[in-house]
Image (tube, rainbow, N blue to C red; front, side, top):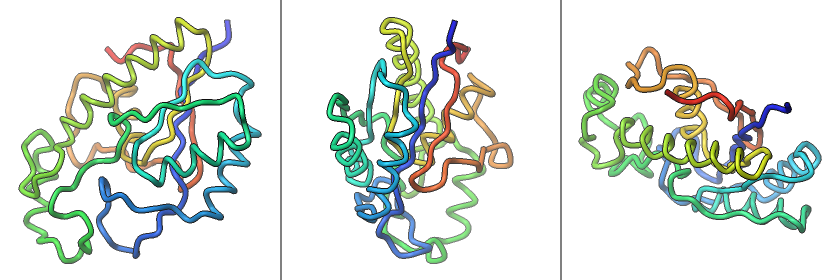
Length: 194
């Protein structure tokens, strides 16, 4: 039996100044980098997919549109569960302008509500876990791989849920690896999260 996979594709390079906090901030991606990522992804994907979803943020929608122009038989649904973390009042601010004490308070308890008013990591993990469970079911029912066009934070959540389900990470355990801009990784869909 062929193992079914979840393709975690990260949007292309966003058009935002270096060092700026952005998650839910709806910034576009570089058009040339997006077109290049779509061409490479179109060549790498299997012929058919069980499902294709994307973050509703424009940097992901751009990649979906570019991919669908190359693969006319593909279709994708926006899924808010695949959106990047919302950093609340930190969005659009330089990271070095955010009080170190506020960042430390956030990383000391990923389950607590954030002072910035944004997502807690616990809430984000729950929404990604629900999307992952649905992806497993769709893959099983339809017999194929699933593609998500999403963000680094979502890829990190999937990585955590695959390795240590049911537990909230400490800051020193949180995975830092994620696909580079316009790149992807695959994870098996056959293994349960619990």
